[in-house]
Length: 523
Image 1 (cartoon, rainbow, N blue to C red):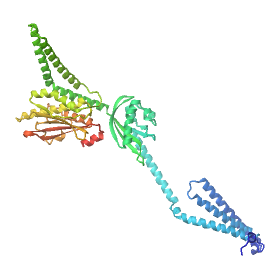
Image 2 (image 1 turned 135 degrees about the vertical axis):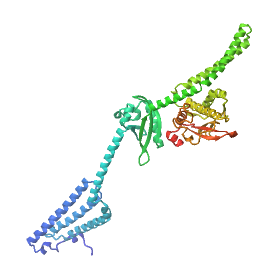
Image 3 (image 1 turned 60 degrees about the vertical axis):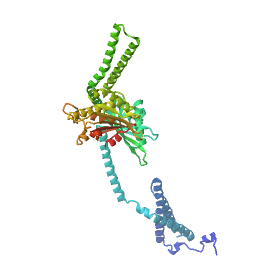
């Protein structure tokens, strides 16, 4: 039969627990003191746990501490009820509290066993101590490395800089080393954390930003030469950029190194200019012949007109024809003089697009008559090469003229041995995919000894007799072609009629390429 709440809590038929102890004061005092102290301790523990969890919100399993607190409070309450039932027989209430304590205990025990594997996985104090020692050692090592890299960055003679790629895609200087500051006159403190477009002059900023964009978007290292207007003046730098990527593969930094090559470029220009003047000197005899022909024509026709004028026999039509011929010959000399003057001066212009076939044609015109006097024929293959290349036309013309000069010397040397020779063949063509222009200069001068063929582009290497060659012509030509992003090579060829010679092939890209591509092409 079900009992009501009042009947359940009715304790009129029960006796207090003190009766069992015969109300002995000493025993009652022992139970009361023990249960009260236990209960107070139990109640203080949850307060401490709750305080700890509230102050240390980063502690894992904080909810488990709250569960323990509830369980301990329930346990403490049973001890206080143990004191209460000594005088009041509320055993039902005590039983209900024990039931609550039982459920709290079961929940706490179940949760504790459920968490046991994760709790066992937590590092022990010894492990934490060992980990802390390892971290301290790693921090010390990293600090040493940072100091070493900082010393390397600040003391290296090569100019170094770090560019930060901002979230909006713009660029800001993170640091530049003292070497770069000395080479450029830029203030490191003024540049640090400033956007590139704000730190540099507009023209210099536009130039370097375009390179940074190429490095960022390409995600690969690039190197190039650039001319910048800086506080120390106009300088030429050979710069390399290396992208630094984060875990997601996004470029977040660009590491740069630069080397001031202004003096080197000046010396190279001096060497090229010297070689150019030497080429003009070699062509001097041909130039004199080219000038003497129109001068003789002018003199003959002028003397003829003067004689007829004195004899009063000069006809208007004949005079007109004579003067027209004189004008044509003077135009011919003027063009020749202008081209020699242009070829001989320093080429201070920048790289530009031009058609190499025109340079080849001009070089042929400059030497054709001179070589004809020595019974050397220059033949041009019909070509429709129209692809433009990037470079300096006069420098390419200088390379072609040097190849002609070497071919002429080889032909004359072969003739001295009693063998026949006397042809130089020139061909210019575009490749099928429209990416490169090829220039071939072939002679029948007997070829080059295969053992020395790989060395012909080395500086100061020559196969000519002492005093007849500096050994710089082909080396300078190699540098000029390399600067245009192309390559030049040579090989012996067998020609018709049993003759033998050497063929130089210049390959120029119709679009500029990076220095790394040039190194691969020559490897």
